[in-house]
Image (cartoon, rainbow, N blue to C red):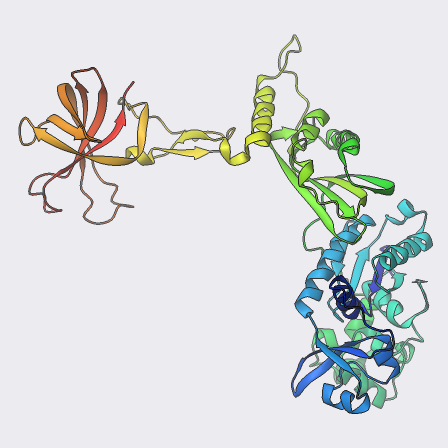
Length: 505
């Protein structure tokens, strides 16, 4: 046995309860004595997927053909099951269940169950028995009937939840049927034919004979593997879809509320203390509210540089709290730091002055919170001699690459796309004497150039023409950056074309 504590939650009526809630939301409340079943497509036609209480009492069984069950119960009402919706709702419920522990997953074995690794978390509820009672009550408030069990392994908890006593805790599994080992129907039928009806009878047999009998069986259908998983001889970890955050602060409320504003400063202070203790700073934050209807609503914020300043972290959510959908209220708020970086304590100068870099990062975060993260960028050099490729936009505080800037003067403003102009030549291969741009004529008074820039053969298309750039100044003192694309008789097109690429101050 291991020191782990695993809770298995079985929701036997989950598909039917979801369907009934959807009917009630549309104002179509069905009588309690009306037999209703949900169906899915089977190999030989529709089969029963879920039934309500009236259909169960009438003898309708899950897995049977719809045609056979209608012959047994002529008044049976059949609707198609929303299996994809059930699966998505179960995963949302698994996230909602993280109010009790960080490791929760949807148990896909029978389509409607949850597995929680509550190791070290039961003290938050006053012990294991109060924790199971709290889980059952919370699920009942959402309209879900449930059976729960707690054991040291996934397999044992799964078996006790479905075949053991109510809210079983580490109970004996020897008397449970072999179906509690999570085996398929054919394997269970084979074991029953061999006279093995309980887990205890299976465990008492010599392992060698069973190993030979099921040597070619898949691991999930091998009774010995399932038995070892139940007893803890083989590990079966609870692998959550995303790793739980290392740093988290919770606020559990006595009654549901609709606005987390008053609780946010305290959460930021608690989270900042945890970050400081570990020598980390938050780069990304996630504020989640757990609603009373079983849904969750969350908003995220990011920091330009690692930070554990509680006031600054709270400021990042100031204009975003209105994006939270409170539903009918929430009774649990969590603040997580899913992305952190090492952040040591340092003194910027002997006088204890304020770190200028820290003030800059806080300014960037404030501007991003107001205008959006995509509104703030910085230009950084790129290893390219083509002007429009020589720089790129990056995050505001991203480190610039070690690339030497161009040695020649470049205009302060480059057009996003060079605009073609009409020119008059002084000499065929010389600078323009006059050009027309945007329906205005400019007469060149003086010029400098040309500066020849060849194509980049490793990324330009074949046939790309070279450029000859000229710095020109018109009679009014305006300075432009023109280039001629191509040369006469260069074999890569017709006559050269002229473009205006930028303007100097």
